[in-house]
Image 1 (spheres, rainbow, N blue to C red):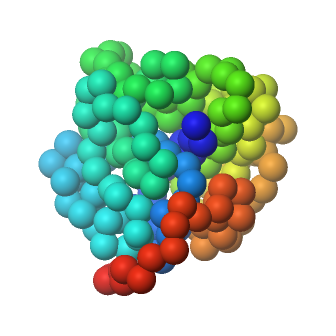
Image 2: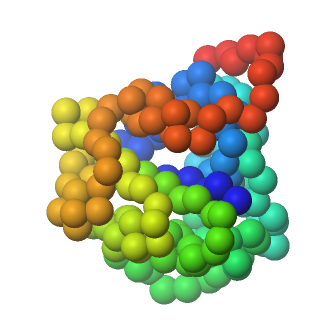
Length: 195
């Protein structure tokens, strides 16, 4: 199983629109944690789905991960993975002042033979995601962060960078290209993306 975990907070929707613009169906399952109020969950998923060939939807309890699918963590629940395969939504206290937390999701990844991981930390305040990318690196995965020039708030990417675990930093567009380069595309399609 190939798994990408992307975390974002303040300024995230704009960065994510750029990252997902024309993103093909990469050969990986994507877990997306965007700090946002609950009432924005559905419209957020719809806006992203209009920009990518990936299937985008809110994650639900016990859902199995699929390559080519973006599983968006719903607000007010921590998203953790069971055996790197199944989604578990947990009501819990805030971690790093937020729920869902990027760190909680990333730290739920387990070392499994043949599983490949990439953690991506985008714009946002504070340090959510820093411990997560350190964990992913320790599992043999890679970590990418948004660069300071394009980040609305550089705290989260900078905190991740300070761990020494980051392999690549760049604009959302360059992060998209890096994900395609890392995992490849599931299939050739003639479907068009509007947006």
